[in-house]
Structures are given as structure tokens and as C-alpha cells.
Amino acid sequence: MRILMDERGKKYMVADKEFHTDFGFITEEDIIGSKAGDVLKTHLGREFKVIKPNVNDYIELMERKCSIILPKDIGIIVAKTGLGSGFRVLDAGTGAGATALHFGNIVGKEGEVYSYEIREDFAEIAERNIKGFGLENVQVKCTDVTEGIEEKNLDLIFLDLPKPWDAAEYAKEALKVGGYIATYTPFVEQVQILQRVLKKVGLSEVESFECIFRGIEVTNKGTRPKTRMAGHTGYLTFARKL
Image (cartoon, rainbow, N blue to C red; front, side, top):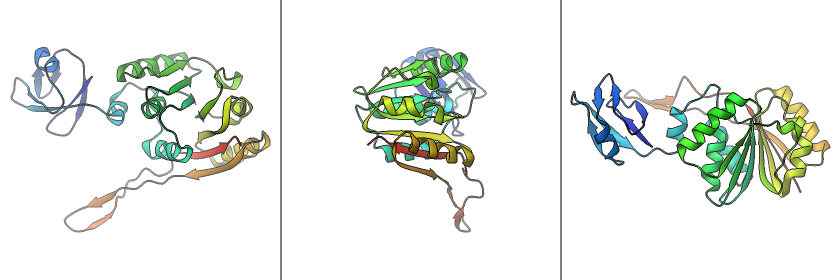
């Protein structure tokens, strides 16, 4: 898998075949023989740099029919739960597979990620995306997490669902002692219900956060926060089995 970047900074995910853009075409032979850092030229003389994609590059360009959780929220989930190499994770609400890709990339070959998706069309897209990135430690299942969790002794269960509290009991049973539940919900009313249910089922350290992320614009006139920003995306709620 390769990514090509043109002179404008636009990125393209390419297969091992002839590649066409408005800047001209690059031959299949040139693409197959390229490596990261090479500069390829089209038949019109326009240059494309070859980049080895990281997980963020890949997610930016992969197939999807739904919104995804942004890196600003993924980062908090990873840091708050201490996610690391060798962890066993359940991700419910797969969507296009972006969160499962992040988790699989972090837990590494020694870890395991199971991703539950109730919609068959989404599950099929997620499977293609995960396979395309080359991860072998992520398994997508077309199943409903609110009807039970097959895996046990999990380090982290992440729920991106309209009613994550419907899976709270199953999640507690599936977690190892010290493991975390993390959830993503867009509305504060969901947070209120969720916190009550998580405490009721006997989970500890229940708390919720919102991450506001704003870039800085540097110009010849001065430096200031950007007018546009990734403001509210969702609320992150955490609980731990102790």
C-alpha cells in the first residue's frame, strides 16, 4: 500500500496499477518499483512523492459511509485507559473501522481487537478497510453487543452506541479487574443516564469529559487561534472495574 502526494499536497491511495490524475498518469511499472521517499513523474512531468502511510493517513483516505471518531478523542481514550501493547480490546459500533484501526495499531501483534457492528454493510466496509491496512489482530463481527459479549478478560471495552448503557452489564462481566469501559456519546442527556447505570452495575471511577481542540494560525501579521475549530464532537465517559 502506498500514498502519493502531488505538488498541491493532495494525497492519493494507490494500488499496483497505472495511476491517473489531472496532472497526468504514472505507469504501473513505476508505481510497483517505488519506495517511500521516491519522487515519481507523470507523463506530463508533474511530480508525486511516495509516502508510507501511517494509520491517520490511511483513515483519511479509506472508504467510509459514516462519520468517524477524531484523533483528539481517540488520544484521550488511549491515555485515560493506559491502552498499550498486548491489550485485549472490544470496540462496539465499528462504523468504517477507524477506531478499531487505531486500537489495533496500538495493541500490536501481541494484542487483540474485536469489533462488533450491527449493520452488515458497515461491517463489510470495515473488514475491507482493516484488511487494506494490513492488520491481522482485528476481527470484525456482525453482531449486537447489547445481546452479549463472547470475549472475556478484556482490558478495554469501547462503546460508540446511541444507548451504551444497554451493554453495561455485559461489559462489566467481560472486563478483567482493572479494565475500563469507555463510551462516546454526542448528547449530555446520554451522559446523565450512562453515569447512573455504570454506577448502578458496580463500576468505579465513573467520569465524563469533553475535548475542545483548536489550532493556531501563524501569519505575517501575527499569531492567533484559528476561527474554525473541531469543537464539540462527543462526550467521553469512563468507568473501571475494581
